[in-house]
Length: 130
Length: 110
Image (cartoon, rainbow over all chains, first blue to last red; front, side):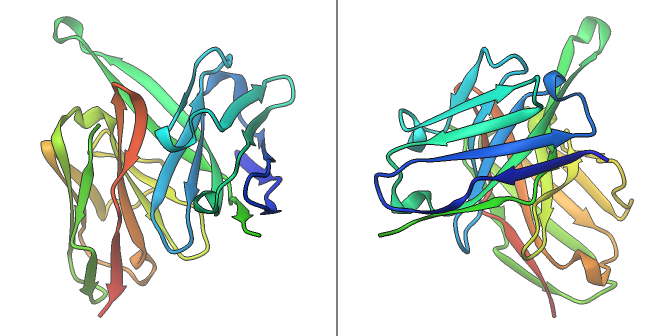
């Protein structure tokens, strides 16, 4: 069964740090980009960060740049999110998501690229409060 | 940076009715990067549609997606009780490389 399981959430004071983990199973983890997406209480979805298959490229939403880092250990089929200098506005459920990207070649018309998140974990809750 | 605006914010319909949800982009986008997700209370999002119009694995054919340029639509042909949820559109932009979600449409039972 294809599965993602997040862990590491909890209550932390403003300015504190937390490391989230995501354990993947049932698919070839090293073949996929992976993302973190969060959802503040009662709010919508917000993409936070993602990392390439080999960890050589990482991207972040502006609001977490310089505070969060993303990493992966393909030998352990695990994804991580290190969160530093946490703020109240970082309070959210954090989801780990698998990205699927593929290319459809259409001959002389050219290639078309498809990107989406097709597997999601159940999430882990991060609360930043004093 | 592309902004996705979903409408309506809340849609009240009855089982058996047709639902039409809109997602408008602030500038023209590639439809191959446009996806739709369903989220029920207390659950993770679930992929419904990718590439604007392709159904994900296991998604019933009452769900369909369409659109191009700046205007995209998710249609549920005949609502089942389990379809009442929040729906999000999402786009991947390459400059800067990031995903953007719409604010969501809540589909509630009338």
